[in-house]
Image (cartoon, rainbow over the protein chains, first blue to last red):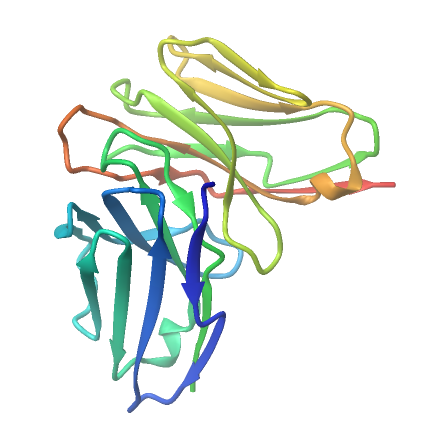
Amino acid sequence: DTEVTQTPKHLVMGMTNKKSLKCEQHMGHRAMYWYKQKAKKPPELMFVYSYEKLSINESVPSRFSPECPNSSLLNLHLHALQPEDSALYLCASSLRAGTDTQYFGPGTRLTVL
Amino acid sequence: GENVEQHPSTLSVQEGDSAVIKCTYSDSASNYFPWYKQELGKGPQLIIDIRSNVGEKKDQRIAVTLNKTAKHFSLHITETQPEDSAVYFCAASITHRGSTLGRLYFGRGTQLTVWP
């Protein structure tokens, strides 16, 4: 089983709202990733967690705040987003960071009004 | 950093024909090359991958070839079917045992359309 789940599937929020995206995997993977994907573009790496510690932050604005409460769960907290932040947000996981295949979830389609 | 070029950006084939998508990479240290298929409204799905100690890998109708000297790798789909229609992304990565790096460098994608 190589399933990564993400909730919600769709999210519409105003620029003053606070919301969170959730990602879960039960494959025993110790690396988890957040990507942002705009239409007709490849995924862009945002954050990498390795053994529940943040190891890569690709200079993402502070209005995006990641959290890894345990080895199976990854959250992305959103606050004061801009319309240009509207995109598909993808979560991925791999057995370990840097050496193993990444498996992607279905994504959360975010629209910022 | 690594730069991955992918061609063509769009590809249309008749059902039953073969499709080939090519990628080149710039960093000779890259040693892992996955291919992802992304259908509309879904996340990327790994379809095949290859590591630099292997020149070719096959899985039913899908094959990937790697030429380390020329720094290019290709995806081959035989006997295409309408359900193969999707965007395909190649990627390259430098993997190091014990490293915390997990960076995939993606190509820009190829929209494959298979006509019945």
